[in-house]
Amino acid sequence: MDDFEVFEELFSFDPIFAYNEQTINRILKCRRSMENELFIDRLLKTLGIEHGHDLYPPRSNQDLRDLHQHIIDSSSPDHHKQSVLYYILKDVLDDRDAQQPAVDFAKAVFLPERYRIFMDGIWNLDRAHFAKAVDYLTEPVLIPTFPEELIYTLCTHSDQHDDKLPLAYYYTASPAITSPKVLKALFSVLAKASVTEAFLWARKQDGSMNRILFEQLIESILDGKEGEERAKHGMELIQLPFSKEEEVWFEAYLSEGKGRNLPGAEDMLRIRRTVAGRTRAIADSSNGFGANTSDGMDWSSLGGSWEQGSMIAR
Image 1: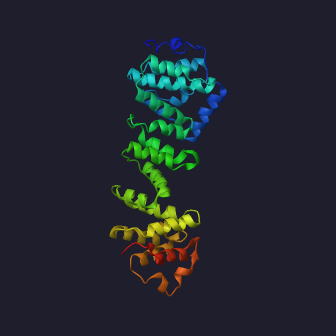
Image 2 (image 1 turned 90 degrees about the vertical axis):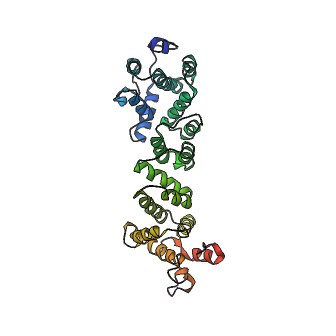
């Protein structure tokens, strides 16, 4: 299709087409929920189109024509412009329960498969269809685009904070992450999935970020919901083989740092000292520490698990 630059040809199925109110409101609601920036807004910026919020979603047929013209006037390569037009044509699916215009367009302009798959993923992500979006965005043919933004969105906005979605994308795309905000968001998801994996992942981070994430891991456990899972995660953490530097961080954070007022902080510190071999075993403690339940953490059950041989070798 050489005439995609002509609005009447692109929208030949309905030259007076306009988004209905329901579709517009749905798009605006999703934008608000995603910190006021959709991925289509980012894509418009890559085309050199500023103020995408004012252009999308178009409120009338004339607004749609204006958006189309802004895209056509971009100096970007045709397949970039066609990708954004494909995204817009997918909006017809929302209005008419039919995706034929987008499919026909992609075939007519020979839109490369990786561009079509990426746009399918981005469109679903912008509609908060997170699981379906990840299905597209983890296709091997794709080159990671907006990886940090994608990870942050999946970590903070996916349904019920489903840990599987951001981790599936992260492990598939394997992007380098430099944003502290994104590192912390991803680490929070990692910590919920596996304390040990989060601990080892934090070690790979450069500079002060390693310590920041290490302390975040401690906080996420002690500040978590009381119960068996919290106790399990606490036990997993204090049995990990800390380096000398990590021992210092652990002591400092829980004895004099921001973590000293967290529920169970003192108990965790004392048990870690026992695990590290710096105090007598809990069973011999003069304080009867192993029989206490403190701040929702049943330390007696932890002590019992040690007696059953679960404590790591010294």
